[in-house]
Length: 337
Image (cartoon, rainbow, N blue to C red):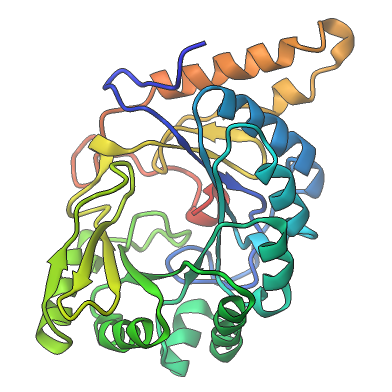
């Protein structure tokens, strides 16, 4: 069967896999402040089910898998899933995005399981601002987790910082200097309309262009880098003095939809062709049908067809800022970051 190519010619080689909707933070741009009702555990995909879907996706050209959540490190024995995915034929890289709170304890297991890279969400180095955004006091533990991961041997660690107007401007320069000093890649991500409280407005977006100006004015000149991976969401810049890289994911002001190469799998087994999709394709029901009704190999054919259907239905762009844009019912933690 052919690779996963949509009607606009985009080839899909990246799969984002959410392993849980649970999280130990309550970040304002993602989760509600009050009581949260999570999916029952029996509705979540097992590790074996995740590997089954990934193996079919790999046979159709998917080459990279990123584990997300919620917070993936709250999923028990997540390193075991990493090891299983690393051994899937066709998968070249398995990475993970985390808030870092449990990284200090789990970095070693993840590294030895074969995890290629880490993305750590870190929006502020100021204790009060961190707690205000995360609704949790855990900054020092996150920083220890990053340091531990570096000592253990992770060569590439990215810091992801969400940019919110009238809130995170003062965080930009300290984060940039920290990343340069510690040998970390830094990425600024524009605030997107996926917060559970639905308070997002266009005016709440601190754009990549605005962040770049702050950095150039306060730290130094930046030189745009050639895109090695055309599907990556970030536009990368290197500091003119050669010390470090900073990227910008301008999902709202300068969307990368034209080169998007990713699919998403939610923790409860739904395929999505866009972060902002309002339609899902049920992979879990294929896996959980009784094998008494068909040949054992049939589920792989069904899964391949489902993946193709999902990709074929992909829209040209998410449409944020247009009259056609429809906000998805699920918030970021329910989809997978």
